[in-house]
Each structure stands twice: as structure tokens, then as C-alpha cells.
Image (cartoon, rainbow, N blue to C red; front, side, top):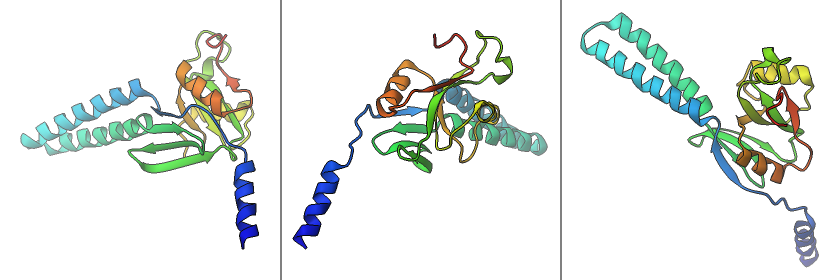
Length: 183
């Protein structure tokens, strides 16, 4: 029994330890605030129309409020980088995690995929971590159809976020449609 415990301790001590900068950020703060404002405005209009008994129009504004709430949940989700990997959740709900052992690719990508030939018009830059190896076509689809359920975890590009990702990710970050923005 003592030998087994001793072997377990040795395995834990020799296991590679990851060290890096822990970070918890909102996916895209400006868009999250914009959709929050849209949600509150549409909800206010819908409730006002109910008060004046204009039900069909109020239903339309409730639907628009729900669409804004959905977008707010996407852009307002929290992405966390830590020793276990990258995780994304919205107020602790709908957690999705990619452990570092499962991560195959990390990089940056521009959101304007149809302007790939114009190096100054790349759109919003995002950082991503993927559990699948991607080629240019897969990256194109990722940015075109973002957000994808079960796809890569994305967050808006900032210098602080790049530094945190690089502190955990030991390979080179892939660049897709970044133009002159990262030169």
C-alpha cells in the first residue's frame, strides 16, 4: 500500500506543470454593451405597448428583445484562461471547456472574411483556441458562421489577451486574415 501511494506522489511531482497568466474576460465587451442596450430598449418599448394595449406590436418588440438577449449572451460570455485550459460560460451557465491537452490550434483571425485581399480591411480581430486542426477553409467557415456550437472558443483581440494566451500556448499562434494589423 505504501509503495502505491509513493508511486502516485512521484507521478504527480513529475507531471508537467503549466504556468501562465490566468485571465477571465468578456468575449467582446463593446458588442455586449450594445446588445444589452438594445435588449433594454426593445423590452421597454414592448412593455410600453402592452400598457397601451397594442399587443401585436408588443409581441414583435418582445421577439426583438429576445434576439438582442441571445446576442448579448454570445458576446457577453466570459472566457477564462487557466492551468486547465480555456473555458467559456455565461454567468456560470452553458460552460464549454477545451483543456490544453485537447487544444490543437490557437491563433488570431479577422472577421471580414470577404475582404481577404485587402490587408487593411480585416474587421474585428479575434483570438481563438480550437480542439481541431484547421486549414484556411475551416478558418473561413469559423469566422463566417461564428458562433458555432462546439466550435473554437473565441475572444476579442487585445494585447493583454494575446500575452495571456501566449503564456499558456507554447506553439506559434496561427494568423488568418489579419492583414497588416499584426505586423
